[in-house]
Amino acid sequence: MSVSDDATILLVDDDRAFRNVYGNLLRGEGFDVVEADDRKTARESFVNQRCDVVLLDLMLPPDGSVQAGLDQLGEFLELQPNAKIVVVSGAGDTRFMLQAVRQGAYDFLTKPVDPDVVLVVVERAVARRRLEHQVQDLQTSLTHAQPDRAMIGKSPAFVRAIEVAERVAPTDLPVLVTGENGTGKELMARAVHQLSERSEQSFVAVNCGALPDNLLESTLFGHVKGAFTGAVRDKSGLFAEADGGTLFLDEVGDMPLHLQVKLLRTLESGDILPVGAEGSVQVDVRIISATNQDLVELQKLGDFREDLYWRIKGAQIHLPPLRQRPGDIPLLATHFLNKAAPICPDGKARRLSDEATEALVDHDWPGNLRELRHEMQRVTVMSTEPVLQPDDFAFATDADSTHSVDEDAPLKEKVAALERREIEKTLDRLHGNRTKTAEALGISRQGLLNKMNRYGLS
Image (cartoon, rainbow, N blue to C red; front, side, top):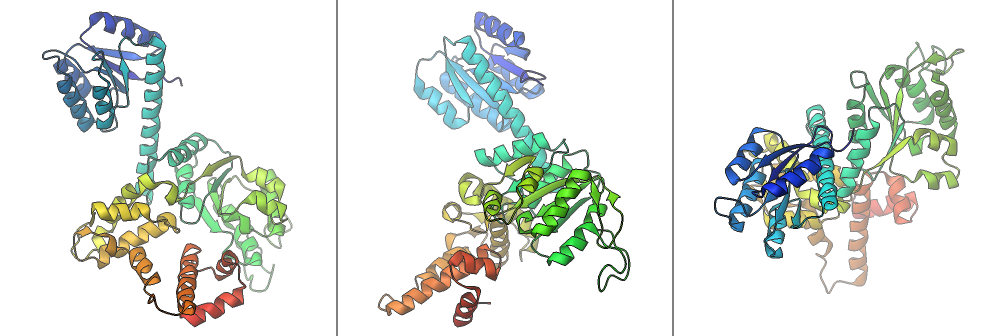
């Protein structure tokens, strides 16, 4: 599908010669072109049909006023906030052009316009419009599937991840989703499944780091009666349960090496061998894996097989942490506040003050989306005012408590307060996993437990 396929351009200019030249140019590239020569006709065309891109002259009849042109730009964007409007003017004053961009224009061109430049700008605008539609469709499908979560955002890194997901979803290519804890890796995996031809079949998820080795093998591949103590009957595994659908292997980097070998064999042959069974069973399963670890680094340490890495990494989708998406934080926070309204004592969604929004954007969010969602649920319940302020947030209170030690206190007390805060933050970021917390802090697990007892941390 080319950029111009099924794309409509609204060309608004009172200069007939201009419309003829550039209308024919765009039609020659395969675009559908609708023309208008005054404000009224332009508005009617914009309202009555879908226009992917508008080339809008600011100085139009009946008044020829640039300000009237800017007003019409604002009206168009109120009607369709995501419209791609390219302002064209011969006014010769760049102040109006910059004002148009500040109001939401996609781009601006000054007459006389190079035809090649027009084509490049229009093609990029159409491509951007389509990508935003794809993101919106994906977000809509996820909202229906998991209304308590969100895949919302317009940051470049997030949009790139959505674009890769949309491209790879219709195929059976294995997908590796990477990103920190709480960035929405399982949600992305579900999105890929929902956009695939397997969407009517099962989506089955397992956390490879949450189960003991022997239990993980039986959970994945199944077992036969008598295969081990407690195996009182045959049991099918998750591969069999996901037959025809998708199996999501979360935290695949935590899978032990001997199971990596068995997984690789299954991925290459399509056969599963239940524990204790003599014969294998054929399955048709798409694999989506996820990890918060660097699998290449694990290969160097001998903890992850290189051949398995290349087998599961048919395509990679990287989800950026929330701190790298500051512009998306207010959108996500508002979404979570609206979703949390039913649990509010008065049943009304809380709103963010400008100061609260700034505080959210400034916070690092080590727990990413998970932390933000839980914080918005907490403040919805705890706040007594409809408009939230910075001191309503737990991280603001925690920050205050970090520095609550008397300035004249001994150095030992100040160090202890800082140490306690760092342990709390790391435990929270790693969801209470004490082994990983100890590693992150550079101390032994027993040393961490001793400090937690000393500070009264559970």
